[in-house]
Amino acid sequence: MGAIANLGRRTVGSLASMGDFCRFSGRAWRGVFTTGMQRTSLRMLLRQFYEIGTQSIPVVMITGAFVGAVLAVQTIVQFRSIGMIDRMGTIVNLSTLRELGPVLTGMILAGRVGGGLTAELGTMRVTEQIDALSAMGTDPINVLVVPRVMACVLLIPMLVIYADFMGILGGYVVSVHIYGVSAADYWTKGTETVTNFDIFYGPMKSIFFGIAISLISCYKGFKCSAGAAGVGRACTESFVASFMAIITLDLFLGMFLNTIYESLYGITPVL
Image 1 (cartoon, rainbow, N blue to C red):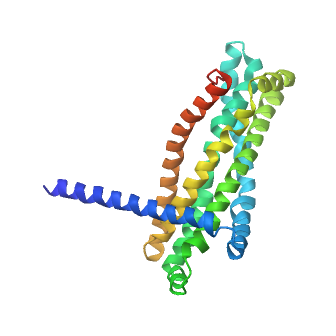
Image 2: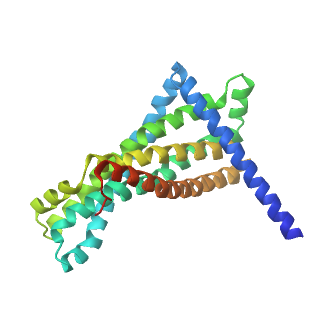
């Protein structure tokens, strides 16, 4: 009976936390559409643009370049063995644009951006700065959460485009200049199979990744327990939850976007 009661308490606690997160998310989105562009929020938004966007460019571009390079290294042998080495541009471009670019960028940002947001807001919770805002009659969600959510939603798709570009470039350098693939074949075959829909496939998914990362990170920061250990635990939980959300969203968004692709082009996307 004790085990069953413990399981019941955990289940009820998980459902209560999910409901609390949904209420928090609803308040944040209401703030985005009602107070998001006020003067105070605009100043905070510009600051978050720098912290989330500009500061993330180097790590995103380096990661994207090595993702494309590693993809080329791992596929060149198989493609050469079946006589399809001229298709290297196809596999690198589509894999980077559709999957590796947005997902790996989302995971990198879940650690760098999400962890930073959770640590910052968690520290403000521990030092009672959030309580002070509430005591002054200011909604802390409008002041602290809304600019961060807007910055993530607007800038993470742009960071994914950077990563996609560097991934394609990295795959080109390895394929052409190291393994001797024809540059003409690489670009010709690659551009033949890449459509406009493929180019925006990753950024469309990353919009939802940005929503998940920002809301989860801010929620964990707001609900942080006292002490340095509480902030560290909140950062860990934020990354794990964001990682799981990205993987789950990637599956369902991929199925949804593939259905749209079939309705537009009448075929299933193939590499």
